[in-house]
Amino acid sequence: MFRIMEKRLLAPAVHQLVVEAPLVARSARPGNFVIVRTNETGERIPLTIADYDPEKGSIMLVVQEVGKSTMDIGMMEAGDSFADVAGPLGQATPIKKVGTVVGVAGGIGVAPLLPQIKLHKAIGNHVITIVGARTRELLILKDEVEKASHETIFATDDGTFGYHGFVTAALEELIKAGRQIDEATAIGPVRMMQATCNLTRKHNIPTIVSLNAVMVDGTGMCGCCRVTVGGEVKFSCVDGPDFDGHAVDFDELVSRQAFFRDEENLARELAEQKRGGCRCHEK
Image (cartoon, rainbow, N blue to C red; front, side, top):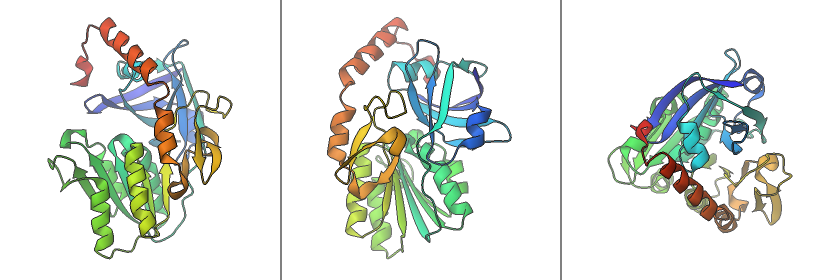
């Protein structure tokens, strides 16, 4: 069993969990993920490892309640245990000293970005991080991002905190100001990653994206997470989740993400009805 050592509410329906998983923590690297199950009959949920501590034997996960299974995780408390935490899975992010790196995150995409910018800073890259959310209360991990970066830009769609506008607009202002950018990483909603790549492509800035394709087994056997990169079929769980953003077929990815939407919505509605529509843990 994998015990939840700590739990913290980061934003409405967004939870930070520190989970006891010593073997995973010992081998984890930026970019790796785990697949968890709440119980023996639970759905397999892929979650990026947002931080890891080999000495304490723990990993940090950030979970946003979107469907039934993530709602079930949101109801768990410190002291509860996951039935399974399988990992670390996926390929570690290729991180090397290149100069100035810009990390661009949308929503909870900041969680998987965090270990990457930490390592970039540790090996001597100059790290500029742009984090965006719809509104101030949805910005998470601000202190951690500032500590892991040399420069930070927080952006909100409604202007309630930091830069008023999208992360892509903030990135474009950096480029127009003549800032040297040697590499970019974008993690977040698919269309946000696509927009970032469209911008960086114009300026010949190599860009890595982390693809959140639908996964089931995490070993490449089920084929659910296949994506097209550079005209070739890849599997996010074993070939990724990081890929060259300029080569990803984002339109295909958006289409594939919607394959099980009806079933997901039905499961969520049934779960909310069972709980009487109460989601008091969000507050």
